[in-house]
Image 1: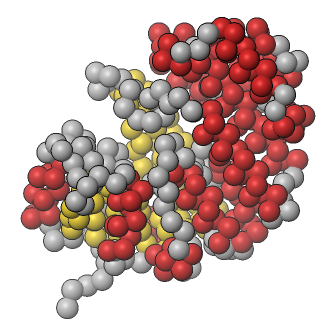
Image 2: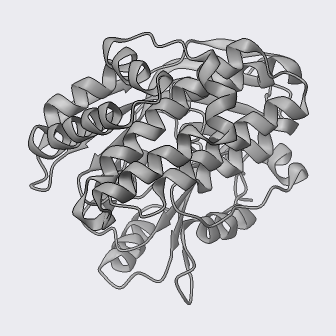
Length: 356
């Protein structure tokens, strides 16, 4: 009789031949061996399928699911979830890696109490178009055990402040809980992971956060969605903010502290949108950029959140100083400087992001 694994790892695979072996190897090098790896080949057109099958032939813990047509990462995860046998599941990406002691660390954490979700920290690795690493940033949230639904809900905004809330790949989900909640994966650019978490966390009543860096998230210039030019980037960011605002309003927990953090996220998102509007691919004239900013100054969200602005860094204070006075030309000038820095000096831009 085949043993039932404790962990399941689901990896959607689509045209990832350049990075896939490194990803799979990081799983096979785990110090805790009681796991299964589900590779969901989303109708790849490169050599990814052959790589998946070659690994499966060598290790019986690996299973390959070949989809007949490309349906996107969310669809692949949903298919993988239907097939898993483990007690906890991790949804990793096919171009990242996990730390060697991740499974062992999580296993020890859930031995005394089987919680709904376990979250861990990550390192963001910035890689340029020539595949040269130019920066590494540890993204961390402190260790804690949340034992009630209210405690979990209170933690969401603090976790989002670090950017760690929205990801799927830095969380192990209790499979029984996941199936009972029955939250569907959705297919959308940028926000699909975030949407899943904001939909499922109202049902989470226990959460462990580990002070352990268990994931290496590769942010490759001109490849990841966060680096590519996305036409409706700001609308997608507003969606995240509104979903968080609704989350806290629904539970009557929209405190001043929550709005302060949401305002900081809003301000950073707005300036990110403004610098993206400087990109030629945005096809926006100077007048159109000014009108875009005017619309924001008059929006309900701007008027609701800006009184709660509490910038805590030099760069954010500069941004806020123009926004609070609704200074269009000053705001656009700062955005232009940010855009120039990002394009010409990516290392400097990365450091500014860390200190914003």
